[in-house]
Image (tube, rainbow, N blue to C red; front, top):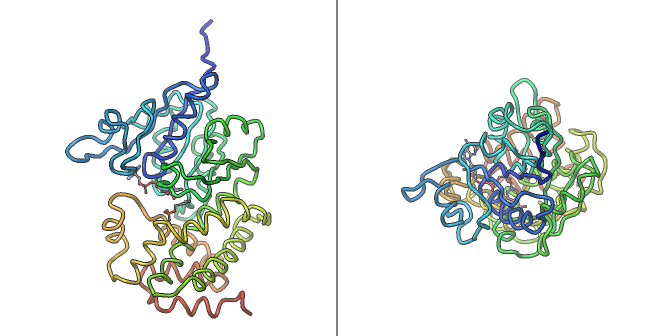
Length: 354
Ligand SMILES: NC(=O)C1=CN([C@@H]2O[C@H](COP(=O)(O)OP(=O)(O)OC[C@H]3O[C@@H](n4cnc5c(N)ncnc54)[C@H](O)[C@@H]3O)[C@@H](O)[C@H]2O)C=CC1
Ligand SMILES: O=C(CO)COP(=O)(O)O
């Protein structure tokens, strides 16, 4: 009888700023739990040429993702693989950490090649908008395409700070309690404190929505307002996040907003996130946001504008635009329909004040 390997093989699907930072943690943790995991992990890298060389070759020789997470060494047991099928085919654990617009295509490529029942974990902050079908949670799309259970991990986790081992917390959500030990073994470190809860959809909604509020925080920074105004953006943004989660998911569990994925991630993003940078840039320059993305992030991506568009489509279809003035204004400012200077009006006239 063929022997089955009891050790679990892990694959990280994605290798951007956050993908590389989490691969560092998971790479170290699989070595610390050699009775549970295979000692090597594969990291799927969307191949590109950097300084005349393939990015996968640079990562595998220098153990550094010089483009997306420079100056941070990855453990040598993190192996960069340019073919997503080869990266995922023997995996028992699939960690998804791609910009959400690439999730569907990537999962469709993986679909026929994965093992029967791997556990998926999505670290992706966004929604997926499908023509005619509306918006869906990313974890749901992964589960539907691949036929797997998918947990989520979201929190106040600016990737560069995590990679520099500055203390933070995160929230993991999984409906199945039996995975709790495995999830802790994969992600927890002395500087990355994990709390495992059950509310997958609530945690995921927080992760997506806060990116849009983060742009709003950048807009008030760009307009020259101070901390009180930013606090108003955070508070009104949080109220809209709670309301959206209730109407979109029917999820009324407010406790999730007090976890790292809720208020903490919102505060971190509104102060130090890439989406905040975009909001500021949109005020100071009339350039198209895709051009700003290229100039400011040089390959990384702002997810907020896409998420704002996805939310806008949902609200429009459900005749609820007037109930979410902050989320709607961010979308209209990103598309240049509205002058960013009008943003303060939407805060002043917000229904929360009525
Ligand atoms: N960077 C951060 O601090 C954090 C990011 N996140 C979330 O993690 C997710 C991934 O973001 P990052 O790792 O920061 O990525 P990133 O924004 O740094 O980099 C973009 C990535 O997309 C890849 N890519 C480009 N075209 C592609 C294609 N056609 N197919 C597949 N991949 C392609 C690039 O190679 C690169 O790895 C997002 O949902 C983000 O919101 C969550 C927490 C923290
Ligand atoms: O999700 C993040 C921090 O938790 C990163 O946010 P930004 O994409 O705005 O940098």
